[in-house]
Picture: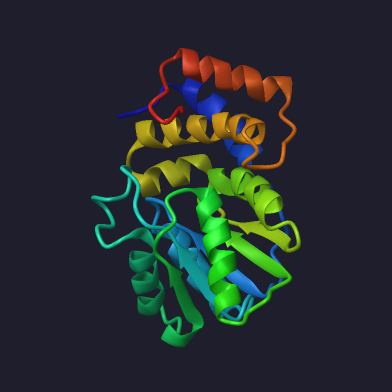
Length: 215
């Protein structure tokens, strides 16, 4: 399936909006947020090997969009990929119960505290278009830590090629855009600025039927 150019142009606007454009720097721990994208584990392993953080937590159970791809759970499969890429087993913790981003954050915080690790800075590794939501959620639920968001540096076209399902990527990006506003209203995340241009693009994509990931 090929998306129309007008849709790709609109998705580019949202793609850039969700990128926090943080400078990657050293932190106390890396946190790989579970999803359908194994690239999160790959990039987490890369950052670990660069010395960005001394250990990494992979967090995530399953969602309807991931259970077929990662039947043993997102965190478990992420750990296996990181091990394959050379991250030592004793530098990986897994949190296998979280089913949403809020739980990713709170369960990871609790897991680290249970291991006697009281961190002041975290690197959140996620899908590129999840950065802003991850940041807003972490600032709400774990406000005492310094947060840097990180994702593999890919263009939208490269990401679509990597996932292999343009429609799924489009729907997921539109869904994440809705969640920026909705989750702030529900108290799950801090508010984020959203320009009229971004809102217009979102409305246009919803009107065009990219709605399967809306809540």
